[in-house]
Length: 154
Image 1 (cartoon, helix red, strand yellow):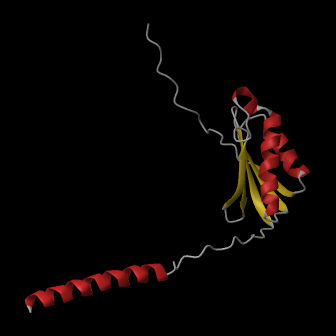
Image 2 (cartoon, rainbow, N blue to C red):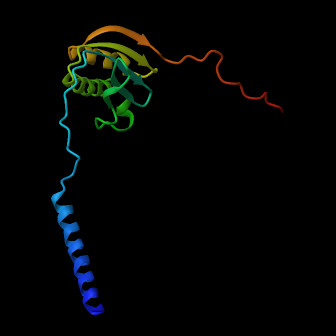
Image 3 (tube, rainbow, N blue to C red):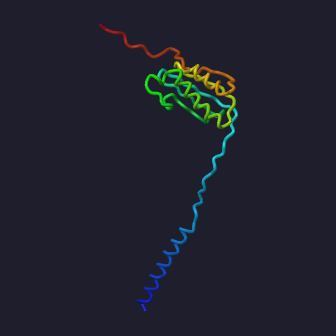
């Protein structure tokens, strides 16, 4: 009798394993891919950061969430060509076209930095059809500069 009990136990274990496999296959994943909803954002803020080496344009909504961005380096310019006004124009065109897909129409522009691509990027945004409400220069200005070096002792 003991042998029969062992055989029955092994059969029930096998049956349980088969049931588990069937359960796993029959269950579908609860995760379903959400469809992308086009956001309709009418107005936003364009940040143009123009340094001596590169120009970066970020377009955000009024809350500060970045919608599109582009830089001269991202558009394929390398070395000294990154700092040209033409590179800034191409980058601004790219960022503007991405923002237009979201239905953006009006912009307030914040320009930062001493680079040569400031005005060109602004003109490119205007040429894309954005209504520019205001232009603000947020270039950081030092109040008293850095600490001067120690006096030289001879």
